[in-house]
Image 1 (cartoon, rainbow, N blue to C red):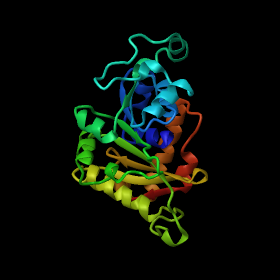
Image 2: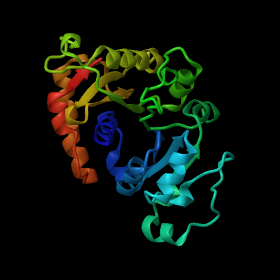
Image 3: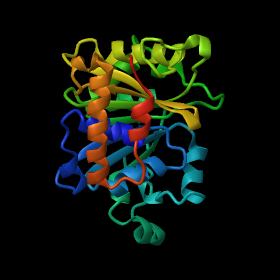
Length: 268
């Protein structure tokens, strides 16, 4: 999810090299917090990354701090101020230079986006399954107020959205137009909804899915910066694979999306 998102953003001619060393800022939004490993990874490896995190469940937030070591100094109040006026000693030791670039908010994703439409994000990660393990329709309804607000906050030239979805492929449900890829009806339906909501009035733009088979997950990517000629699957795959190698080298990532791109890419 992280690697394919960064690769897609870089493929949109975003200057990842300058961001990596802190010469340029990259605004990131994480919808869904979990243990906080994703935002911590981004902030640690990319010195120019400034990350907002939105989590609905206060228990998830408190446990990520208590049990997972997420910096308490990064937790925000509803008014946008830090809960702690100064960082705790453990935060200073473990997360110096990182904690200040993380802001964790307790909020519904819809409410946060609607309140902060003046924000502009280069990269948005969405991993927001609810307690029943369902991805809420309110987060992918193409005609919703939320989708319109999300469209405003996603950078209009290179903005990239990455959505984590469970794979729904079935042997009778394979998209035969994407050879070798078993993207199911639900993933394609969600992808088309984001395409309509975020790319309908854009000159460029591409939606694709990248499978992670052994995790039974799919990373759905909405890219405003990749050209519409990217409908050619082989050209898109070649471009992303080449960019993936460059991103891995610049950021020194411990994992790569290269193998996933080779075998599990579907244009939507």
